[in-house]
Length: 296
Image (cartoon, rainbow, N blue to C red; front, side):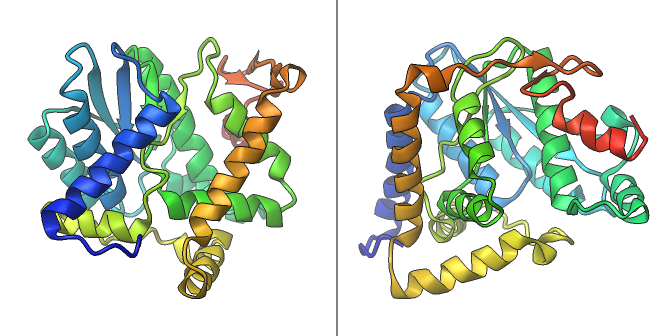
């Protein structure tokens, strides 16, 4: 938390103003964008939808569409879809749902089961994240979207940076940062209007705003490296306030200095030889994972 004492109304304004500042600072949206809001039904994504829809009311040429991805994992997403539909209707945002089963022919549960039988080194979160992002890009493009907004918060961003450092994969994170901020044919730029807001502040905003808290936790979340990093950062920040913001802002400063060098900005995106999606590889990450399981 920021350490500043707010009444309920001032706290709500504080969070909304920070999202507005983030949008303006990063020039995240244009006046005529068609913005896909990735809405899982969790508190972060519903709060994002509430705030962004409120801000974008001032721009009548902006269109908002909420998309929820149903992974198909033992009913895990059922309550989230209900909440996403409820608040999309409340905020006047069109809502669409797409499933792993319809898109890939398999549910996430079936994919994870195949991966476990094969002895895949990848965590279920890898399959889920990569395959969800592909659906968002494909379906977003089909409806004419120009931006995809995700509800990653300050905690998420700090965790991701540390995870990639510990894995020795900081190069991929920098490459992803550059690609997501640029325009490429077939690739919808992704933006994060909530990335400077701590998770605790989002939870309090949701409570004050009467937003249902989706408490059905992902069955794999506690098994992941992210869970360990989350616990470490939360414990560390009790002794060193603002460490999460310092991690994120320092990384962004570093990447922005690299991005100013034109020779490092020339990233060429190919087309996946299987599905035709934009990729830096010969085969996109999603097709690579599915091909490895022999379900492509």
